[in-house]
Length: 447
Ligand code: ACO
Image (cartoon, rainbow, N blue to C red; front, side, top):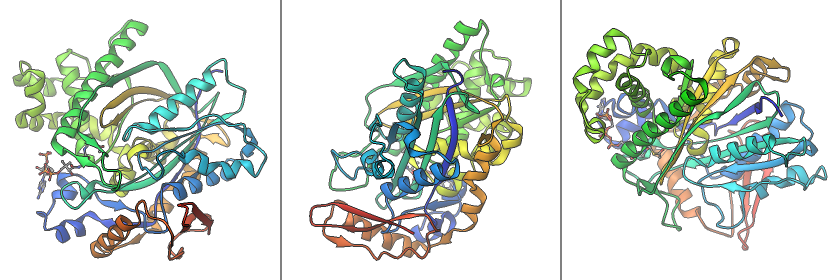
């Protein structure tokens, strides 16, 4: 199979959200801390009728419907998630009724988990399957689904929720340049979920920022190395049109791009112009560790702003509006790019950086083509209807948001309850949770 990659995408996020500005006031944080300091606008969250399973049911059924895919045509289904609902039964199996109904139970794949990286693991697996000798000619389907919630404190404004479904196959408008991949994997305690009675992670915020940036450096080095070996020339920021980052909050994305420019500067790459060189020169002798801690270096990285505006800013809409959606975050950023630029993306190269705490990270490259209906960039943009979905949301007050999280804390891991079944805020076609019975079995309905 040639040009294997993403044929179609659908995104779902809850219609319920809180404004970061209102949350700042409510939390007693200084004005601008969440909006400018973290760079976030709004945060979506699940109410008691939604969870990672309902969101993925919604995304998958909508994708199949809108691209007119017969469920029998799916040969592999993989889910990436770090939201634990069951320690054994995969989220993938909750999606099987969609396919069983059509007589298709011949579908490989289970869930992948490592913090925000599981979606990328699932995606690479599916792409590898289509490229392999075990491919049976059918489509792969990847689902990234997460509800990111944090305990009260500084991490709480970095939550979010969404599910993204991606159809995988040959001759794709979004194809993988599979030879260019750089990974970095190591052992760290930056963010993890050891407490199985709570949905909330244990998080060392500062360490997670440094781990993320170190992994970025390392992946970029490997990526450049592989590119140079295969293409016989240096890779720099000039060689890709867009850079897309896992987006816990926008400030880290700004820092990440600046970090790549600093890497290019240290390698004397052509992407760094005279002004940037002048600004970064005083930092050329810093050790790696020093460079991660230097506030002065960060300030001088304003030099990357014009390039950031061109190559990153168009990818930031959904992550800023919806928040950190963990496994879906990187692909929500990618969806933002397609939404903003779908008519100008033909022949463009996009480099993506996926990060999951603990830690696992990969940088990889995609090549975009216009494609043919229904698998065209413009149709993907139409199907996702990002503006429509963002505009039809319902704002909750911080009080109501906190109340909802309290209720969800009690519901986490609980059995024998019925939900309010109130689906008035959900749009038609959305799945919602109705009941968890005395055997912890979960029941969903479709609006
Ligand atoms: N106006 C403008 N900026 C402000 C203001 C203000 N009033 N107040 C603070 N800031 C800035 C700070 O200077 C800082 O910016 P800087 O990083 O450029 O210096 C930023 O806002 C954040 O302020 P901090 O005091 O550093 O924030 P805090 O430590 O309270 O929390 C953190 C931030 C660590 C990101 C926290 O939200 C967290 O732990 N989040 C979860 C972990 C996470 O997302 N990690 C990222 C990778 S791992 C993953 O994806 C889960």
